[in-house]
Image 1 (cartoon, rainbow, N blue to C red):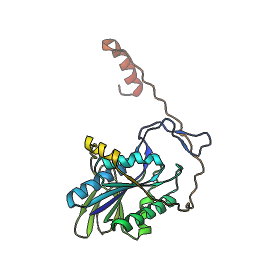
Image 2 (cartoon, rainbow, N blue to C red; image 1 turned 30 degrees about the horizontal axis):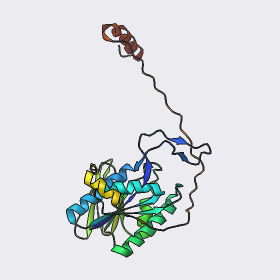
Image 3 (cartoon, rainbow, N blue to C red; image 1 turned 90 degrees about the vertical axis):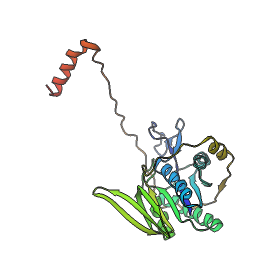
Image 4 (tube, rainbow, N blue to C red; image 1 turned 45 degrees about the vertical axis):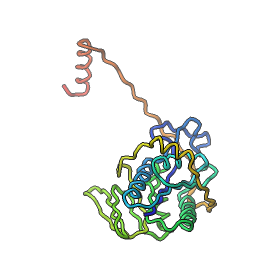
Length: 254
C-alpha cells in the first residue's frame, strides 16, 4: 500500500481568533497552530493502514514555510516522508489549493508510483469549505467518498463506512481512490520520543507549484460578537439555600 495524506496548518482549536483591521486576514500574532483535527485522524489512519498491509505513507501540505512544523509532527507519529508546497502565507482559495495538491501528487507519483489511497480531512478546521478533497479527486479522475468513519482495504478496493442520520452508508470503491476522513475514525496516537527525534532530522521535500487562483475571492472576514457569560455565586453552605430557592422560583421550577 502507498498512502498519501494531505494536511493543513490551522489555528489551534479553541483559540481566540482576531481579524486584522482591513478584515482580509486572521491576526496570527498570538496564535498557536496545529494540524486540522480531521487531518490528524487521516494521518493516524494512513499509518495504521501501512502498518497492517505494509507499504509506505507520505504527508503533503500547501502552506507557508512554518507548515514544516505540522509535517514533522506527522513524521513523528509514523509517516515515512513529507513534502511542502510552499506559499507566501496567504490563504489560497480551494480551487488553487486543489491544483497545487494535484501538482504535488503528480510529482510524488512520478517519483515513487501511484498512491493507492489519498486521504484528506473531511473539511479544514478554519475555512470549512468541504471542497479541496473533492476537487482533487475530480482532477485525478479517481473515486471519492467524504465523511468516512471507517476504512477497510482489500484486494484492489476499499470499503468505506460513512454515518448518516438514518444509520450508515457503506461504499466499495476501486483503488486508487481519495477518501475524506472525519474526526473520530480513530484515536490519534501521541508521538514517541524516538519519533520526535526522527522528525527533527527528517528531510522535508519541496514541490514547486504556482497554480492560477480560482474564481472564488475573499471579500471580508467579520468578527462575530463575543458572548459574555457571568457566573453569580449564591453563597456557600446553608446560607445559600434561600438564594437558590429564589432562583428556582424565577425559573418556574417551584
